Length: 306
Ligand SMILES: [Zn+2]
Ligand SMILES: [Zn+2]
Image (cartoon, rainbow, N blue to C red):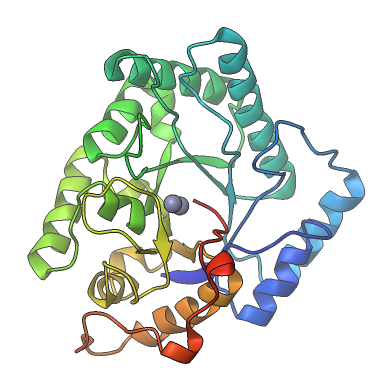
């Protein structure tokens, strides 16, 4: 697996690659705009050129863009639905210009709608967006969710259903798997049989070749808790075993895997993931946070992304 972290773009999109150098990332994730606002950035030819040059200088390694959190591809209000569809298409256009190969996005929340029709509406949205984006190289990658509230795409069945219902355009969809969200949704990869069974079920329902990226996050909350709370690798409820399997799984050698945490937790996590590569099975299930390193609450609860 190509390992890295979600990097800041403060001061310009191309700044991400300076951080990538410092942190020795092999892949990164970024936001191409403010993820909590609808406002679309003004991407000048100059900033596109700066980004492309810095990306090339960094060896052209994989970059994932995380889509805005406001997008809901099954919004029941038509103005919100149009806005969401336009925003995801704009993200694709921006990533195409920048040469970013993958966009991780959350399908949406059903809110008051029944799940069946909501999944249909997500698929209809995707089919339209992909039709408009015909010929683009940037790949849309559905991210599995923690199943918090009415959010869709928490199970392999729901992700499979969205892809299938997107029709012929669905062939172009990739998948981004978040390990914390999987665990929150009740998938237990902490044993050899659990790990193997999960990926064979994934292969049946989605196709393992669709896996374009991983979000590698441990979990603050227990199995099946349906809450999106990331923890440092090895220090949460998931523990070291599944991460040891993932970084040594030859099927994912060319797949990007990024940690989504604030830097003070992401960088030690990245180092730990790299240490697991080629190492024997870890004897310890879970690491204990040294007391002197216990971060103060405000910073510890801050998240880079979800
Ligand atoms: Zn999350
Ligand atoms: Zn994620």
